[in-house]
Image (cartoon, rainbow, N blue to C red; front, side, top):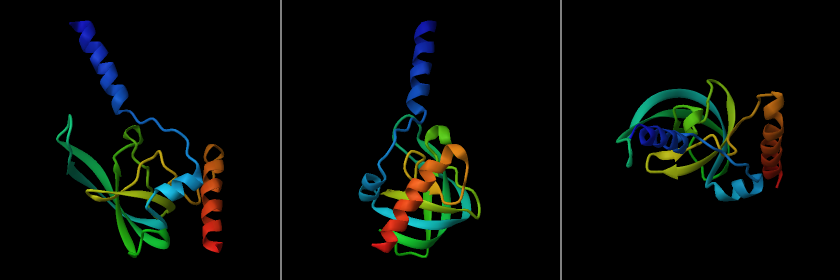
Length: 145
């Protein structure tokens, strides 16, 4: 019985952990219904009702000021939900930072996860730079077409 409990706990932790695969930026742009550039303004913690193992989930609700919409966004400000931490595929928004946002609508509005192409527009770190340039260059080309 003890072995079964250990195996169950290992399986359940793996199923909760976030695991990302790469993406093609053109496919992502075509697939995501909402794409815009915006600057982080405020954040709040909210509880959402979910189905499954947990009846409620704590999420971050981030408000961004929209600077440029590529598709699906007409508001000047928008609230985006994301999981609380990156282990649960939450996106790590930082105050007063500009982001290229790729979002899906859900029952709570718009949602962003860490596995998509949403990215910090100005963060220049070696491990991050190729992805940042890929997204920002792609979006720059969308403006000129």
